[in-house]
Length: 252
Length: 127
Image 1 (cartoon, each protein chain N blue to C red):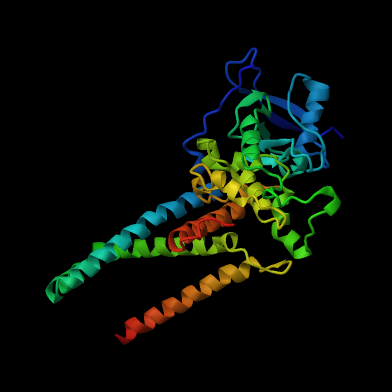
Image 2 (image 1 turned 120 degrees about the horizontal axis):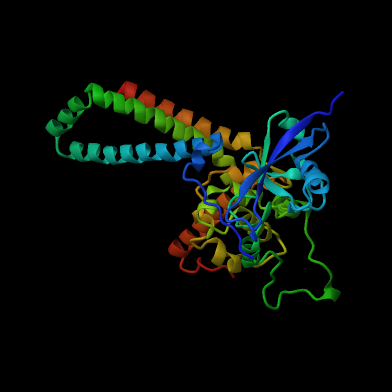
């Protein structure tokens, strides 16, 4: 029996020789158990060693192999060829980010935004426990309140799916806001007010028009769209508190 | 090394059905807002006395007005349904470790909508 094949159309951009990106088509063997990442690895190993892309774990944990597969942001390690066969599959770098080379994007903007929301536990001055005092205890219910948002693997699929970010990347974006929410809702954290400077700013939650696509493409069911809308609700409550109650503007 | 920035097409909302339906939802809001302005005008006419009010009522019986009302009604219903379906993302309620299922949140909104509409329909039929 002859081996079944399929075509992979890959966006190439080699900055030292290309003025702009263009598609290159590769014919690869079709295997039932292969994912798009397997096909790209096959190209790299057997057809064209110059193809550049990011990958690591092959099991949806590291968040490195996010690419546009037929126009939809996906982890290529979780996108099975059999779902597309026999049609051609088009692989492009993630939308919304500059292309470094081939399928590799420049992620500096995302990293900057991630740092801006201070994704770590912040304690108020004088309220930090010493090592001798032990850990901050938390009940299962307190853990459940934020656990979903802590599942983010920083794969940036939500940014590539977000038209707001892709049109104007001043938006803080879905994953960063979801992570801010993850710490804000953590019973051990006291840094909400510090994060609000970014989250409640013009580039924060209010940029979101609630397209909801971030949650649809999220491979970890983080539901960033919900995190953003909850941020809008709590931001609105803050505002009314500051207007109605004289001392309500600031939490002590 | 120079990076390449691809232009995001203006037709992005035609590339995927979920984007398209989002745009429809946003578009329908223009009609909902427009009708709110009309309602303010309606109250203004009411304040002008019975003659002005009945003249407006007569004008509203034109086929063009009825056609516009049908369109606005369809858009308002679409707008309401899409937003009620999104309420579970905005209201997340928990009892201990358990999250209240999303169908109960949106279901409560739909239920309230039906009840309020029924009460209004009853008032209109009685008056």
